[in-house]
Figure 1: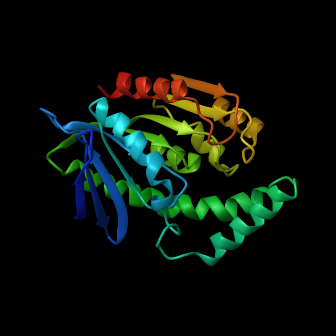
Figure 2: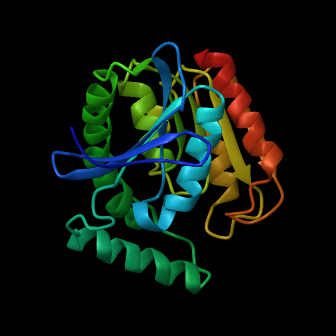
Length: 243
């Protein structure tokens, strides 16, 4: 991990950009901490520059609760090399949604499965590097999307103790079996009127999760309309399990 820039934000949070094996990322740490901070991995749908305002707001909210927060760019997003297969699958997905047609499992598999296979090891490598820093300790939580990435991480990464998952991205049918293997506490956010999400599939996925503690927080509104109180409830969930 190499830090490439840093700035102190107006609330005292230290924001540092880094690269890890040429993968860009951002780390936010609280302005003052007497002990290593617990860590929250911030998931997102790709495009760090585009997503920065929302990610920074989530990170600063987490820092106010005493957490460090970090994120990395997804494969094929931002300035990272594109995949012709993923680009075609994304085009096919967009065409189906615009036409009001069902999105086939074949399209979802082409788009999501290769992303999960590549992104999850990168997240694990980032976690290795982040936990080696003296200012960061455990436990670790995951918060955000892509839902399928969060599912795989919850299954294969024992250092993640709890997760907030954002429904709103397509999950391959094959990964429902993985969802049954998830046992960590979960808090799932679902926007009831999300125009790009299959609501029933999201409900079926929640039902499939094997966790003994799982909460579904559903609210009216579109994809970006998550109310502040829903975000606050998710933050309280992470505080309860990581502190």
